Image (cartoon, rainbow, N blue to C red; front, side, top):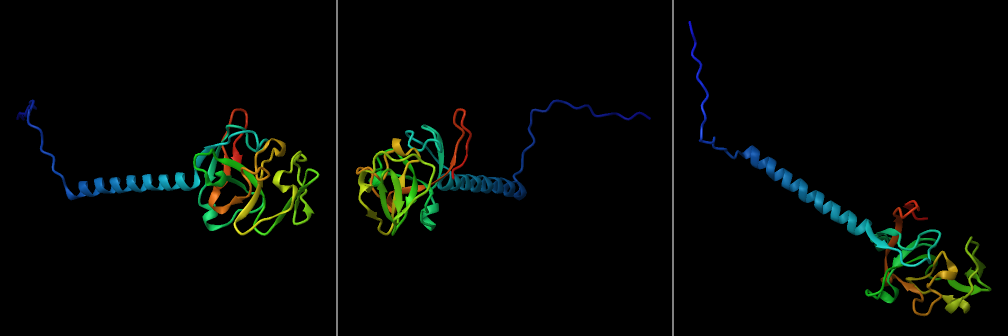
Length: 195
């Protein structure tokens, strides 16, 4: 017996697609996952990964001129800056200025003075590996920091415009943008956490 096979012929009619509840559920789940991923990325970048560029050589050897820095914008909404933290701030809250990056050397309640190029905090010389300062600026006379006030210096002490300068002065809580926590790779310099 011979079986006849039905020959396939060309058809110009498309099979109608049916949208099932299962298909709708999968599409909706992909939309929700995508929206959550975008929201999480925005939160992480905005609060923990705001990128700024360092201007000037005031933080040399730690951070180079032009080197990118990631700023944690939430760190000081919970805690206050501590000595040795590297902070990012706008002098006098001036939003038209570039960001300044400096190291906190004294915090609220501390007394600061620069005597013969050496930094004194609460009457004690601060032992560090930085150069002697050629100019004490406003810190030639003892300064007592009030609540929410910080005295900051650049790591390149003789090439830095910092709290010694009258146009920068004492940094206050409302001037601080966040904590510099990571420096990006720059030229032949490696990136890494800022200490």
